Image: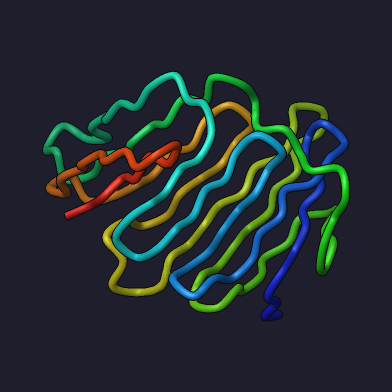
Length: 152
């Protein structure tokens, strides 16, 4: 099912709100905003750090971990279609899989369109993981309070 705005029950009795944008997909929490496009990820919120980790001995796959300083806190009022149980939806060219794991919390897996420079990204309450080819270079740029993660 294709939707433009969706809310997903989050671990703290709030909601994660996802919406299609002109350039990609925006996921909003009370204390965090993450926008995904094909070649970059913009992050607005407090994070502790970022680190790259090789997933195999050949270096063909890697993951970028973004450690959040505070758990992603849900927005109190949902918008659009509300999901309380597991769901797979399309939002523009992006796909989202919502996985509630009681009593641990919930997580979202973001699938970008073909041609993107990362395979998928997972948002959990305390971390964002971006999976990609091992040869991808990751650059960081800060504009005001927004951290841009640029992939090449």
